[in-house]
Figure 1 (spheres, rainbow, N blue to C red):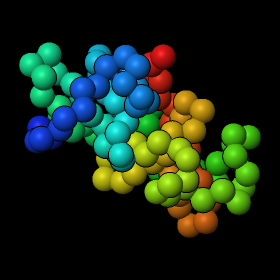
Figure 2 (tube, rainbow, N blue to C red):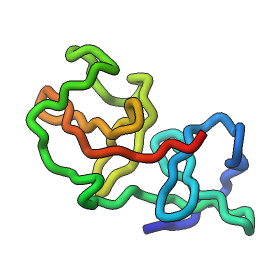
Figure 3 (spheres, rainbow, N blue to C red):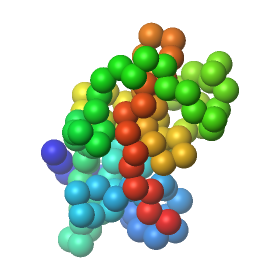
Figure 4 (cartoon, rainbow, N blue to C red):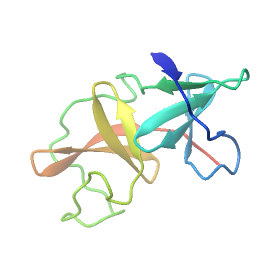
Amino acid sequence: MSNHHENHDHIHGKNCGHTALEHNGHVDYLHDGHMHHQTQAGQVEEHVLEISHENPDSCTGGHVCGAHSAEHVHGPGCGHPAVPHGDHIDYLVDGHLHHPHNGHCDDHGKVQVVQ
């Protein structure tokens, strides 16, 4: 799923300052709650991580992760990059997706961060 992001003056690439993810055979960049794919033609496409077996959208009953305290609440400004996933937003924590849900975090699977 993609559409073009109009009037995007930032060029994504190595060392652009945004977290890069492997996605369907290409690289997307997490930018202000969006997944941006920089095309060779210079356009920026908006992408969304698909719901899949590897990245489900189900409740996992309270994912326990040593990367942050149980009191940490994911949301805008929480310090973790936002990742569009299906019809919702997840947060990237140590290579996997956390989804805030009813006072706990669900584990929505691993993603490949590109260094």
